[in-house]
Image 1 (cartoon, helix red, strand yellow):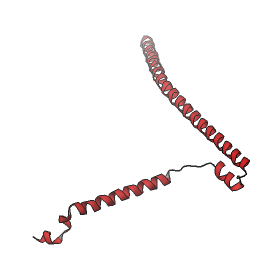
Image 2 (image 1 turned 30 degrees about the vertical axis):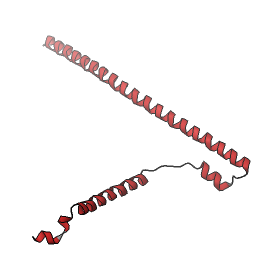
Image 3 (image 1 turned 90 degrees about the horizontal axis):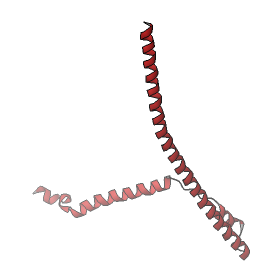
Image 4 (image 1 turned 90 degrees about the vertical axis):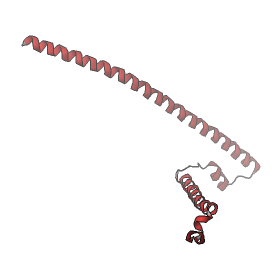
Amino acid sequence: MKKELENQAEELEQTLQKQLDLLKKDSEDWLKVGGAVLAGGLLAYTLVKASKRKKNRKTAKALEVLEREGLLDKELEEKLSKTQKSTFWPSLGQRLLLVGFALAQEKLLKKLIDPEDADPIKKGE
């Protein structure tokens, strides 16, 4: 009985060791994927920050030139320095409008191309 328990304990230790090895392999793969995603995110973040910085420099130079020329007032300065936020909804509305135009065009073209279906005189024959 004692020997059976020792064998069972040894089998359980081997099974546990195999599971740990499998977990290590899987975690290495996940770690590589996570590292790649993190690196891509950091790269995208730096590119966005760099482009914003470049835009801010151009705006500052434009404000400087306008101030030198005496054309800068408070309203114009606000318009130039105000951040523009893009949203999803206007583009969605434009897309829906274009889809609506396409559907209407398709229905009208069917009637124009195939006037036989619309002509009630020919249907009676």
